Length: 311
View 1 (cartoon, rainbow, N blue to C red):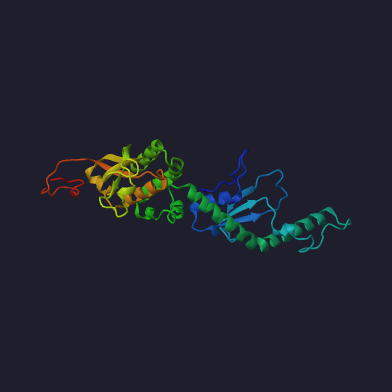
View 2 (view 1 turned 45 degrees about the vertical axis):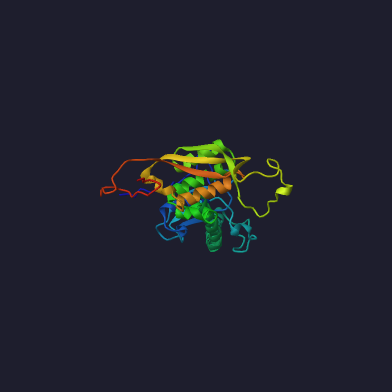
């Protein structure tokens, strides 16, 4: 019974000309190591009218150092060597007959293949460097399947390491939009809703400054009430802050937003980096309360006094 192969023998169509390294990086999904793929350079004799990839085949006879062979119409190191370095001129004599010329050409082709195989380790090393780069690029593009992009973002946002993988991936998807919507209240609300999965409401509240009752620098001889000084207490300085309300949130899920929690630390970092510079954000949590008995042993979650539980 003939075994069915997953290899595309001729991956290029009429309108495509895939690069050999790109195809090799895709084939690595089915093999353990990049050493399993070997690119064989045939020279550029047919490149003017053919695709980059001549054909792809599996080597089960150990004729090459790898399991998969991708033949490409490219020049190798051998093609840049001076003529006659590896073999003598075979077609210089006119007295040769047709059969002798054909035999000489075959011998020259055999020597050429052997010499190309001699230079193949050096060409393969260059190929491996490029295929590793393309493989990492493909894994970064497939953010839903691999965590390579997360590994790049972790040093910039160490808080993401404390979150679950799903939330961290959602955040890196939204990170460019956070920069675009910096200071825009409308879009800032929409992006936070996408990140948290709960309704977000932002209202503007006065920015109150607390005046100390006994300030050591106050001298009433040079102060004018209402012009250069005010009475003690909270006073509006003309600026506004944002009051950000999250929710309503179920009581069992509200623990993720408690002070010093991982999610709350991430939110504070977002406020610090993407909110308007002179605007303070006061976070408020709207909890959807559900009555229960403290003595009930069937409770699936524990209450937090002052947040999810009130006596």
